[in-house]
Amino acid sequence: MAILAVNRHAESKDPTLWTTAGRCKAHTTDGRSRTGQALFRGVGILRLRRMTFPKKRPMLIFEQLVARGLMAFDPNRKVLAFNLPALAKFPAIRQQKMEEFKWLIGEWAFENRVHATPTTPAYTDTYFYAYNLSDDGTRFTVSGHGAKARPYLAFDPFSNRWMMTFTEGLFGVLQSNGWQGDAIVFTGPLTMLGVDCELRQTITKKSSDEFHILNEEKLPDETWRETDEFFCRRKLP
Image (cartoon, rainbow, N blue to C red; front, side):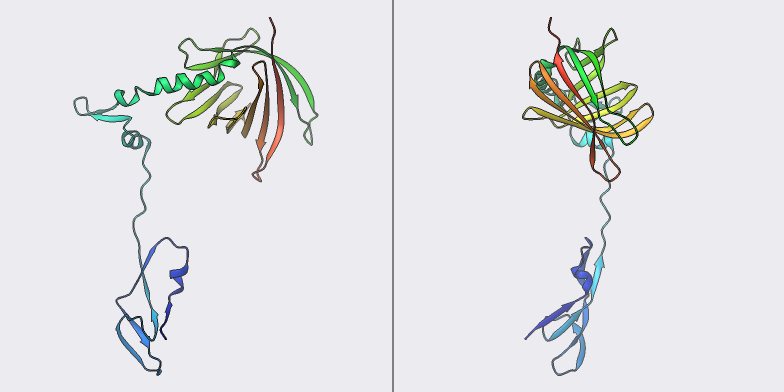
């Protein structure tokens, strides 16, 4: 009966490749030992030799753009230039996706219900916001009562993700992979008045005249806690 015992490292989860050494010491069933080429007979004990390979270097951003065909080296100017034929299809993709949020255009009344914390009380406040499409149709803008419109929401056709931007008081970008039924979830790091947090915002469309926003903050233990929510209704003329 042939029994083969190998070095315990061969059964580990080390991704390094292990191979048998060229020669090994084998013990036969009669107790005598001999040295020779590794043979799978008798009771053999094989020594394994580790073969290491260099780790694959991560590609830098410009390398990735070239690898994806979005940029190419211009031998005349000796610079990287955008590959315009490869980029030509993306504006149409973005334009089509923008239709998913056009119901948002108009004036809205917001009721903001802020949840209590161990040291701060719960309260409710009201706001009024207006959403519009930018002149070039590439993003939605938002403005408070009498305030200047600022960038709010855009679709990035290269990553196939929605981008929600904050540029006043609250700074950062939340990203989303898109709608799941009547809900869309945005996540990302934000800074509010100098305080860093990771936010998850879920927008649920109730109808063309009503939607709901739930904000959750990620805690150090990786769980999410609800912070506040908005009940949004379109202002009637």
